Image (spheres, rainbow, N blue to C red):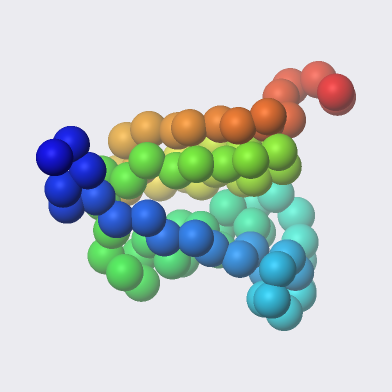
Length: 83
């Protein structure tokens, strides 16, 4: 099947879900948290999915770690102008 070998990992960003807040909750700090997870799990060829503000975080992470991220899937994501 097309999904063979596919793995989905759901991340609670610092300060969201059940994760404790980080010292800095800015966009780049949250992107660094995503990159930290990818690095810790030694993941490459990753497609990041981001919903709402998570789209901005996923985009920032992809731009900061192009050696790990090969694609983005954005759902109802924030963009360059307020919505």
